[in-house]
Image (cartoon, rainbow, N blue to C red; front, side, top):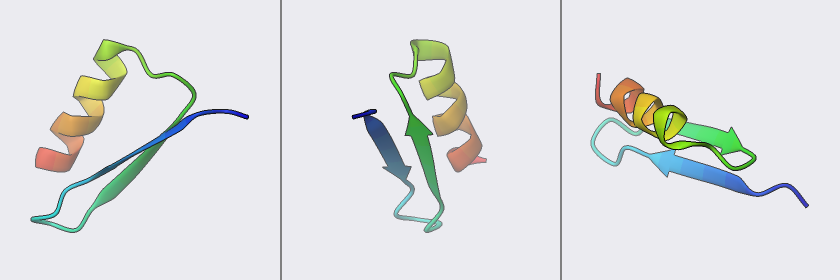
Length: 36
């Protein structure tokens, strides 16, 4: 099974789903996208 990470911004309600094992840069980019 492929691990899936779901990051949700409770303030805006936006969600991003990352499949696989994201490295640090991908994780930070996803968080930056949600925060923008």
